[in-house]
Length: 396
View (cartoon, helix red, strand yellow):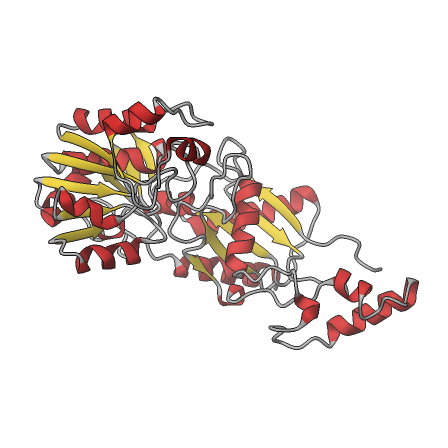
């Protein structure tokens, strides 16, 4: 019988994961138990996805603010440090800022405006226009910012991040000066020792600072790349992708976990005879249309995945074929013509008009976004997501 269902995304309930747990076994057992409970079967090319959070938790990849402070002090000198382009987040950055401030005598905090890298607003574009401010060239002091724009609380959290970050730095024992600018060179008027906290533009920012005469430049990806006093670490991403665990601890992005996804794939094959794909995912790569916030605060959507998830989709647009190539057909003849076109499509549709409007993004970014929306970030209790039928098409 012809299948009448395409892609299905299922959140899979799992036990609470603790450090040292055999995560591969837990994930496999949870997926197979769910299949038995809900009456579905695994198929070849199903995708089992697990959140980066449970991977890092099983690895025990945690660090204290004292470990952050020690590494910052070692790498940036411990005197006046410029901290530039952070995102506005209590969960993602505030705990890191606390550790950074503990490793300095003074912090010059340079905030990008009107919003941070992922879209959290400090002030609206309309207010900038009314004030005659050019964000590409104008540098604002804290006093000027307050004079022009007053207090601006985040639309969703209700937090005035300017006040919050300033107070956090002072409580950590450092002096603080806050400015607003978008040219990374501006910070060099205040200090030559700089930590750049942007995520996806960090390589460019580092290059600009070094070329402009900075003495010491670190990104968040350069802090805790190795253990400090027995702490966790991330050799590739450092502090990037970390989350607040407690008031004094962060959970870092998972360390190397390719062996984990390969092991889950192998266990499923051994137990079911099905060849599934497996990936670890963090933030989805999408933008909220109301708050204008780009979700991706992790350095990548997926830090580890099996080989079958490399590349981008290779799809034709059904509505294009129906409206153009086969506009004179209908019913069964139309179905047969489109099915034949799909079966005969080439392995590379770049430049083919029939593929226009399909999404030319990495498979892991697309599937990871689907999984992030499925699992949520609250109390659903489904840190594993099973995606079925993603690689099907109209002919299956």
